[in-house]
Amino acid sequence: MAEQLKKGARITGGDRSKLAADLKKKYSSGRSIRELAAETGRSYGFVHRILAESGVPLRGRGGATRGKKP
Image (cartoon, rainbow, N blue to C red):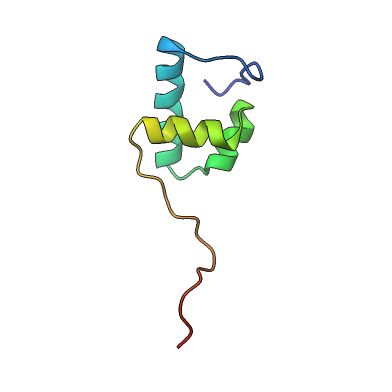
């Protein structure tokens, strides 16, 4: 289901379940939310929400983290 979805089209029912399973599989294999959003033509927020609804444990942001200076 890597094809571009119609921008802003509402995705419900079976299509949403199929998309969620596809995104879950790709995210679990290491792809980023931003990559998945670009690939599907949907927003970062949409992909994030679908993954969260699917119960996928989301990864941390990575990069430098702010901590207390020693």
